[in-house]
Length: 140
Image 1 (cartoon, rainbow, N blue to C red):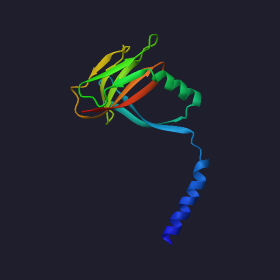
Image 2 (spheres, rainbow, N blue to C red):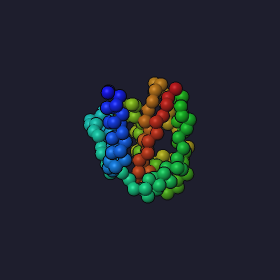
Image 3 (cartoon, one colour):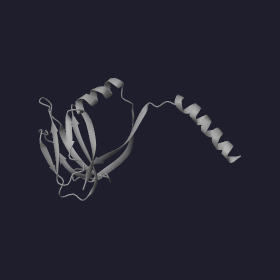
Image 4 (cartoon, rainbow, N blue to C red):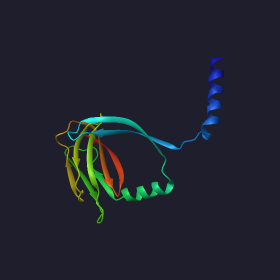
């Protein structure tokens, strides 16, 4: 009886879910004060991007390379932008704490020294042309 109920429930879900509206994207947003301490954390629900926006973002960010990953000491950031260079490089730990920030333009061949950080997973964030991209960085 229990199996029949679960089977029927799953069947109903598979019929309903394809028609459920999926028009929003959720992400956790962190805000920091001047000292790098997290002051606010909240869930941001924004409308999905159009297909054109997604394709444009992929083409913007396709010219950026971040390597090696996993990294032990120096994380290389290279790109081939001449006009508007990537800006606002930020490194976060997995708790959301801001560990490093560079608000200057990021020249191609920039090396971020990761030797002072413990082994673990970090989040690298960069802005270009008003858009933001993130990488998950593994530190050995």
